[in-house]
Amino acid sequence: MKTIKYIKVISLAALLLVLGSCTKDFDEMNVNPNAATVVPATNVFLQATLSVTYTLFGERLDVYYAGSYAGQTAAIGTGDYEYRVDINNSMWRSMYIGMTYFVDAMRLAEEEGNTNLYAAALTMKAYAAQQTSDMWGDIPYSEAFRLEEDIMYPKYDKQKDVYAAILAELKTAADMFKEGTGDMGVGDQLFNGDMSKWVKFCNSIRLRAAVRMST
Image (cartoon, rainbow, N blue to C red; front, side, top):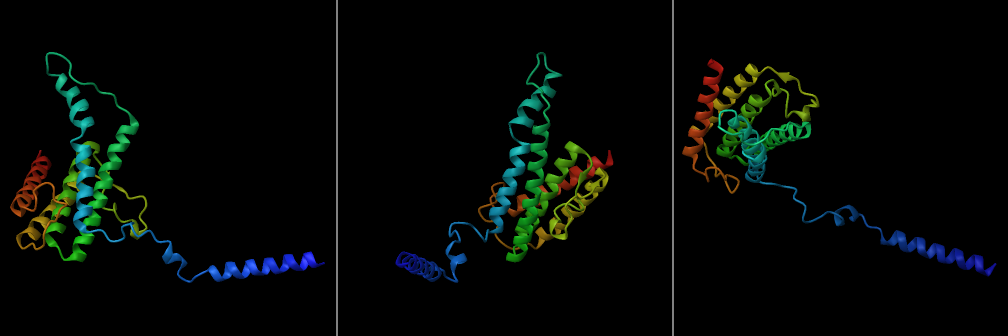
């Protein structure tokens, strides 16, 4: 009988100890202090740029596939072409990840009041969209990047409509550059904050898109 009472006392003491160790700040105590919660727009812009450039100027497109095309006009064959679904899907995913990051950079730049960075992100988004459409033709664009509106399966737009949207976005970006304010920050690894070069880049893409639409 004494043993049973002793066990009950020990159990009650253990329960009180457990309850006493609880705290209302338990969730806050388990937050990782090293996890980023606020990311500057320029950092997101750089990640987007890397995602797109790794695909467009990486080994697969610029060595293997380009070598295969060049080999058709060379004296000897150059490179090799091995189409694989996973590679195609990876390039598609990388381009859309990049464009999504550019959209995020635009949102953050707007919150920061940085119109130069916003215009640059819009320019790069349009540039990536043109490259993506050139590779795959009809692509999701008008309804893309709108997950907060519960659009999980955006429709595919005709290539001509994608190009029209690209031209409109580039015009918006060019107009913003005219009276733009704000520093591009460390994320601008293309022109290192030289806004005159960004204006030229934006207008050159507009010209290229317009020429391709006219042919």
